[in-house]
Image (cartoon, rainbow, N blue to C red; front, top):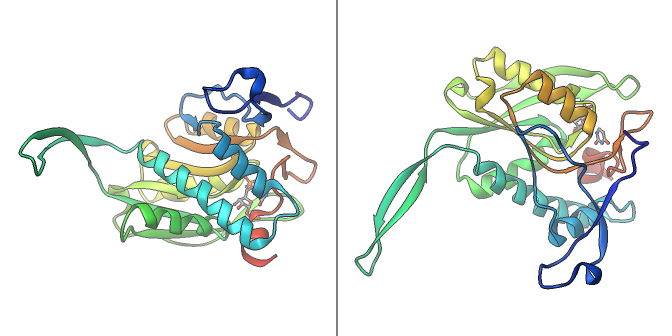
Length: 242
Ligand code: PRP
Ligand code: URA
């Protein structure tokens, strides 16, 4: 997939003509209807440009990643079930609205996924959060499961699975297997992700056809070390230690 040229499109507000808009590389098109890619707005592209830049320092990396994570969580919540809810306003009129239905929890794939927990907490007060520690072997890129701690009633909840990087898909697939072994049906899991590879998306969507994915960007492919290209390097290192 790295052989294919990236899709470069004009990005900008609708009131400008196409010729007046700057061009930028936008997300690779995806053929699976379970996968939602955030709208490729100038805001999103500018935020992604900040975190992809190797010269961005840790403080800015955290700040701009957090902004994208917030957009992802807000979009992820749109995939949860709702019921009609009619309310009366202070001026005595009715408004036909909606309420969310169903219990949720977050599950982060440690360590990088933990960076997405605050964005979820900002949107869902006192949300329960489980953890799964999976580490990718630096040589082989094979995932290894070390630890998990999940809410006891997780089988009755919608699960927002959190991991910013989706490369071969191995770590996310392993995490979903853990969730399924605890009784969570596939169609009640939403995988929330910042940057995906086409290979990861394909592996995952073929294996779990009912599981929804919300991502900010599908990149061009993987390099020989199974890093996402152009990617942003090692997310966990840049967010936590570099
Ligand atoms: C990274 C990333 C994902 C995984 C993606 O984690 O956060 O969990 O690699 O790669 P995959 O799709 O090929 O499995 P890593 O194991 O490097 O650990 P970290 O979160 O501690 O950085
Ligand atoms: N993990 C990362 O943090 N980045 C990649 O590109 C691949 C796996």
